[in-house]
Length: 443
Image (cartoon, rainbow, N blue to C red; front, side, top):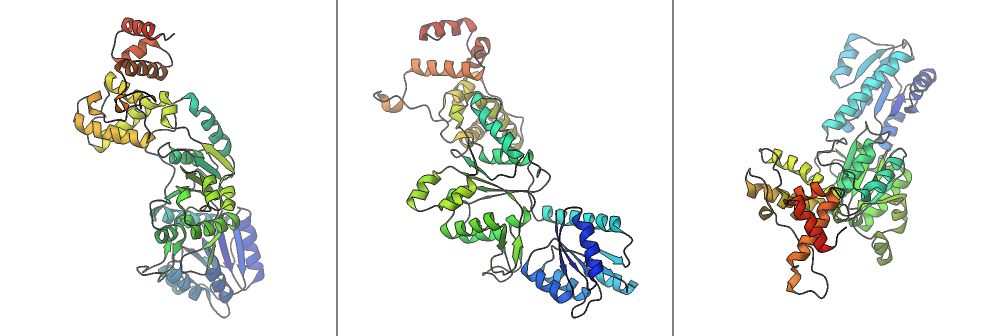
């Protein structure tokens, strides 16, 4: 679906063009002359302009020049009953997508031409930096039971247009979940755009979101289309939404309510159709009580909340995720994907992973550099061990027997209770494992 402005001083032509294109679910706005079309272009955003060449007040060529100077992203199709080679050449030199001779041959030709123009507009968007939902990281889960309700919720909500709020600690895979929702949705072929609210200053964040007009602020030497505009028709992922300042919260609330916004320094109202997904690792309800997050905005985002469990609660996902990360790390280091020794795997299973997948990735990259092409061993891994229970001594150091007990349980959990595989994972014999299970009273 695209927004199309149809400018022609003949009502019959305007109606014919609009009716033909609205059958393809485009939204058409009609203008009776060039001046009316110019005002509409100043006030609203369009994907395509279809204009008559000869109109009173302001003709189609002047309208084409205006669009090319002020809104180069808009495609233009010029129609005329007074066509000649000079007009066609001039229109094409000015950047018109096509030049049509009246009377039009029929609606099919018009629809096909508009489809091609819209496709070229989409190609421009991709060149401008629009991202699609292709994730280079590991999948959301490898089947851990703790992730089953998460996957079920994602599959159900993806089919709808509902706004989703992803909750969870930093590094639990909220962007991976957002991309999964987009990939399973009817918008999967449309853009996926993401922005991290914590990564930019307030001024830069507003410009990245909404775009800006030339001269809007120092350094704004040309118009820039914002990511929200580029995501039209697709999915917009707003990460770390709890970091938004009050003024931007108010502006976002308006966009969610009305699907309209203006570029920074601009007066033209642009319409946008995006599916919103927000994410945060903060307690937004507590922020509402503290007066730092708007309650009305929270309810706009929290239409369908999904909580992602931390990595320490999904241990059977840990080693498959680690191996997927090592594939990427090997590629980045220009070497074969590093492999883990059983001792290294046991240590990974024993660690707390308070930083979740992000901490795991960092630990593996450091270990791969230290291993330098050899298998990664436990000695290469710098990880946080589980804290000692309250009342224990040693500054957080756990007794060896307790470490061994925890490692055995983690290994069994990782292989769904298969004792032979658990023994292999721990680097011990199966008989030894049975003896230790008996020693620790594990059934």
